[in-house]
Length: 362
Image (cartoon, rainbow, N blue to C red; front, side, top):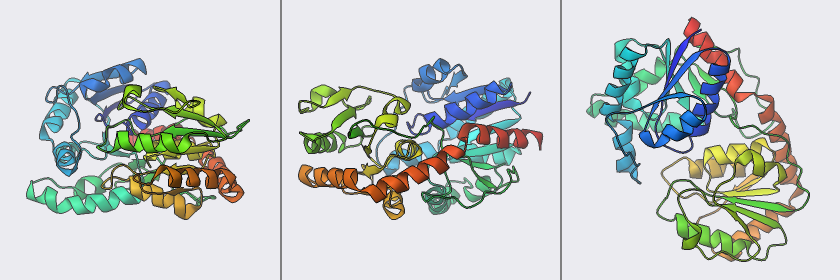
């Protein structure tokens, strides 16, 4: 039995990968603990995982914009809390969220064994981390070294959005190795019995979230399709004008919605997008945050021919036209179905757990 500590933060898109991999390790008989923000306690404990909250960050809420992200990335208090937890609960491997650069740098300087968990497109993160290098250097934090020494970098994604994937090398925990684990959500091939459009935007309240929701809802009004909207915790029904005939849910798991979906309209978040594609469902992306991975994800699905992207400020008529075009496009649906088969062939949680076991044994 090995001991693992996952170090994470309340970011929405990182929740599913962290829980999926932690539970896969736990089911293999390993001791697993999660360190995160107090707002995450119910999710992780509800998944049957031991959870400890950061002492330094009670009531954490991520500030929108680059300044809030920089505070998170270089938060030394979270690094101190990680070290304190490891004194009380020693670990063979510490699995750290890719954005917690100060935690990674601290563990690297201490010579502790750690892995990095990425929860979006690897190339986007790699380029972003290179850009952070200068800022980190000015703060006395090494960005590149910590990633180069990770054993390994586990990517909760696939090597690309075009099937078939290039053959993947044997799993390795050699420092700096990048391992594509695959999707972390349970998926089956979608078989809608009628045209069905799922509307699912961000769980984080980006500044334009409510206005974007209204444009999307107006676009879906009177569509000749079954339309399901999952609002999430960041917006309430009272803030929106909801057209009749749209099935509105405060929340519903993707694995219950996507098997009957013909199209998913989202914000380009990696988790929602990959979950839809794992079911073989095309995606229309309306990115909410230009500084995040959302525009890159949108461009990736457009290049792969498994969906398209457009501005969140597009008027309802333009969004409606894009929905109708994607619903009618057989080629897009065939490509998405082939991609879904390739994504499902990679058992993401099991593959990630296996390479982390190799890391613990190294």
